[in-house]
Image (cartoon, rainbow, N blue to C red; front, side, top):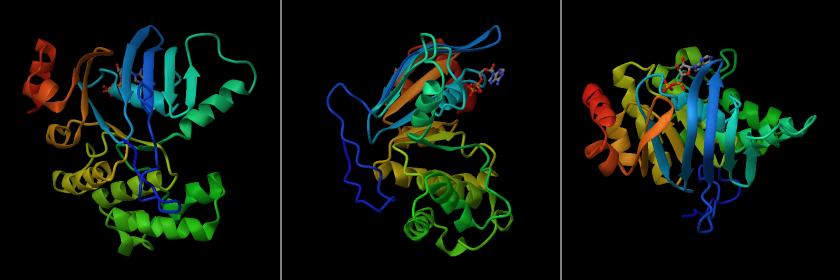
Length: 272
Ligand code: ADP
């Protein structure tokens, strides 16, 4: 593991070196309920630096809630989430005052998220959308960020669209801007929540292509998707969820080609 990201070249993943037994991401006993509805029950998994984890499973099985918990868009009711050096324990009482907020902010900063639909700012150009977070939130120097943003747009194949507005782009191009925008924040981990499910079928391939490029460059990724071929080609680890638990886990060859449980077999038959 570990990739030599050069400083100032965000198209390279951050250099994340693991020590044995210390994966980049460790989730233990993650639990979440909405009211009486227990949506996640003691989820455990690890993600190694430079690897791709794909979460699959039926609608409502809890995949998005796992992803949103990593990014603090949901606050778990139990368990421990660690990304990099930032660990938040949700099992006991929350720390007093602003301490919890600071913990959550630190955890959130570890990952970048790409949503089902892009949420780009409609009144800003593509380039402005990409530099907004790094300049306004992270307060990095505008000139430096501009150079990075242009390289990232090149990486997602949209260098020539920098000065256009989101409405002038196709859905697939908008999603690729969304990816560049998330990368611009230099996260250690990239999260993708069904990034192609809102797209017309002919636009799915270009987004998956960018994601494959990122994977081969060594980005650490957790992806919720129904694109089984993508999972077969790119995933190091597949987690099959059903009813708020991880029912099967393993390589694509194990979980997708030779599922052990009837639940996974039935799910895969339905979507293939
Ligand atoms: P998946 O991504 O596998 O489709 P989700 O994580 O989106 O599953 O949802 C898991 C369950 O949690 C579903 O039953 C869903 O209705 C419920 N759920 C998700 N978010 C909320 C929420 N904010 N309030 C209430 N229920 C929710």
